[in-house]
Length: 485
Image 1 (cartoon, rainbow, N blue to C red):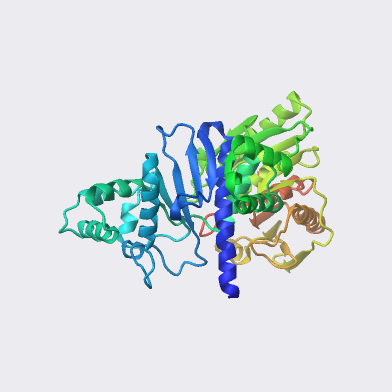
Image 2: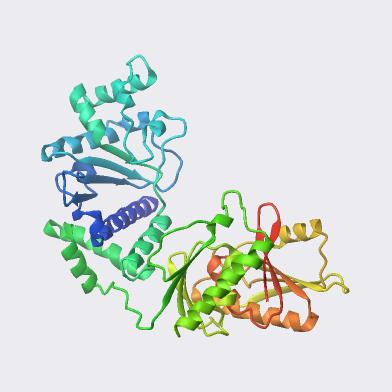
């Protein structure tokens, strides 16, 4: 019973999150949505959430059935959709009954959204169109002697309907399978909420999900959400993000990909022509040092001369070297305060450090007559094996090797929030300065395994730390990127 209850609660959460995800588009006038109805009373199985457009002739209403599965032990197939199990109604029959109840209203779309995918190799996976989730009309015209034609006959016989009605029903179906996990959907919802000027994160998201549940419990007209009622609810729940009175500049830096974000850029650097995430192609050190770093410094010079604003909202899919370099140029020493996106959170660089956060430091001697220092920072994963293989293959020697990691060891969630990130950045700077003062290297060779956002915060604190050569992981091995001075 406990496992069933847990599964049901997860399914409800998935459904309510998806409903809120859809409702938020009421705030975007370009989406053309008139209202969103949760648990439509006449939609049968496809009642979980319904989207009504302002102009039904341009795009029909969308009726969603949301199916959540706790694991991926199976998937959808042509046969599974018509499986009645122990005398029950099949999933295709449920969608068919929904369509029968709704067809009198005119055109409509019946959507099945699920975290389960179609089974590999099954005909269903080839019928679902990637462009718009429609089912390929080839099934409707295939010869009955062919495998695909046989499936059309089996589906039609299963529904006990004539060809004309089957064709109409088939053309309304949309299968969005392999949909995101709850964690992914939470992240998408958080980004939406930020983009629409709302508070985001676990607290605000929980308030929103509770409100969806409350609308369902109240029933009646409460389940029909319009822009006016949604806006009033956002006011009542205090979900609008406070406006930042301090002036800020928005800077985009693109490396791996060029993306849009939750704001418009005041300044933008697009370096994506030099990068290819799929092939792990990054610029060589000459491009870094002779072109990209000078562009970054010129941007800082422009900002400092044109305005006295020192708050920067940074957005971009940055490689780690670019993240370090941005922080180094827009440093704490130069009074810059940065806003960063980290997963579903917003980090402020001036967040006070968490005093409980500690750093593990391991040192190893190498070659006394060498001039360099090796610094390996492992946060979300252990960089040490890859780094040691690389430096050995390159015959690199160092006066000292220093390995840093959070006290609990490197793993995906070793940094819990901006306070711990701020503390780690500070402690790393302290250790680097100590090592530089002790061993007086000509260059520190820095290798890093961690998040982009923490790299920016560390980079902000690398002043008075001597020359630092950064490296990018290329799988396998590393390649030198930029030299910070």
